[in-house]
Image (cartoon, rainbow, N blue to C red; front, side, top):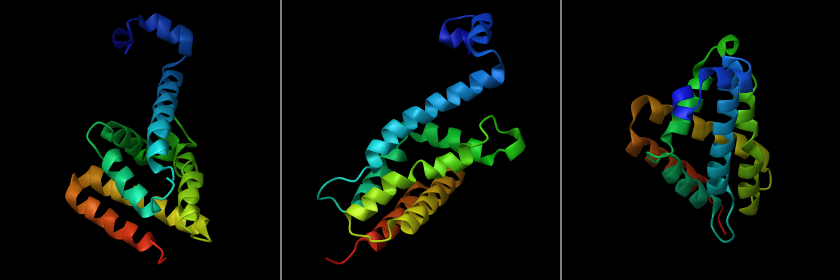
Length: 155
């Protein structure tokens, strides 16, 4: 890691104190980057049904260039709680997205958006886990499309 950063292991230890702290800081930075990119993709857009926003976000989130985020954070979910470098990650990885998805659902006219946002996150996480496990992009994308159609309220 020091070589990739163009420094020495001694300097890394100086700045981060321990290897665990370095890993934690790297995870936090990866999460900030993921939230910036994914947050923009999941944000409601005026005049666009939120199911369409979710479907378009899925296409970009699951694109090859963004899959490293999915693999990295998927591995964090797979670690036993006593072996993870970021103990509160599991909770934050869900609660961080609730306000964004709730806003999109509310913009579509869903009156009780919080429970539905929780369900959407659960479906997204399940499909991402499925995709990471099976690499069956077509099947998981079709499943996501089926769910997003259910979100569209009659006008």
